[in-house]
Length: 165
Length: 335
Image (cartoon, rainbow over all chains, first blue to last red; front, side, top):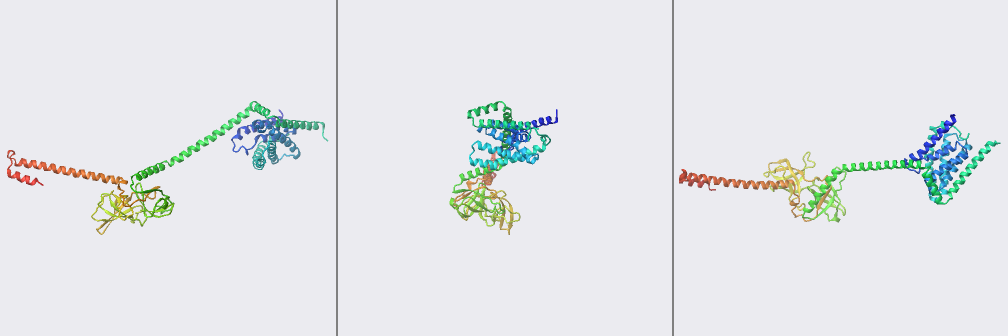
């Protein structure tokens, strides 16, 4: 088994771990609105190490999961995550973001952008949109970016590959 | 210049992206019934483990919250239980006050004592009733145990009462047996804080320990019969003409949470409204004394009868006596 394959397996395990955190730990955390979005962390970390198409596909799947669990406006989350996955992969190619802090910043921006797309496509009222985008989304972006940084520091070696190579 | 493989790779990415984008938009604008059925299907199949996981997490969180709630309730119960004796005591005190109010044959206004965190709180008390409730200066203030003091000043909503602990407090008093009259004032002796003294008792009038001292009604401020305290000792004897007794106060103004302000006529006798232990003891002793007196009379009569029998025996010739001695014996035994 090649080292690269081992790393891919490890990365898959890490994604499963993040998914478990999303559905088992996140409900136990305080406010669901500002607690870290582990699925988005997984999506961003995957997309930033893969091609734009794979990123978009992963985003679509993650969005479909979220749409199925919160079907208030089915498809909004799929659209948002597709865009986020695609642009994460594209942005990484543009910015050569190997710096962990830049990675974490990508996660924060991705979360805020995801919220923007979901809220707009869901037809949110202007005042609520403003409140969400200026208060809750930045807070959640901060917590999510913080946890993403923690994951990157902890599993630094596992993220040293490019999955599209 | 990019290679063919790079271009194919980019084209594949673009195709994937457009496909995902199209599916997203399609689902976004699909009929609601379709959306719900797709979501339901996904939740029942692929996402079932994740939903189960989240359900367990929610249950765990709820259990934790429930545990916290139960713990908080237990802590609250424990906290309240700490105050249970105090609540019981206050309840008992209110019952006593209620009983007293039923026994009182005089107008009264119930009041709460608003204790202040001052060292001199026991000397004057702030009461929660004022002139609007009919309270005026010099109205007596009583507790179920006995006299607290009298009202000094009033405002429409509150009033200030001078208690027996105030240095200027005086009340005319008498003992339950009625054998001594005097004036009760706060004790000025060393260590006399919280004690009273009964002054002006004539030297010839000795008061036993434990005797209850009541207000006499003289002076026109306090009605007759309010317990003031009980005798616990002698403080001094002045020049052989007066004794000063130390009294243990009947009521403690420093800890009284509720009182009654008497607003009716001061000429009323309130002895029956305060049936204290000492008063009962005095009544019991009175009855014992009466029984004792009755016993002594019976014994005297018995002795008399016995003496008569003896004298008759001595004077009877049949029993060996003489008429002269019999006549003398009858004369001696006749009271």
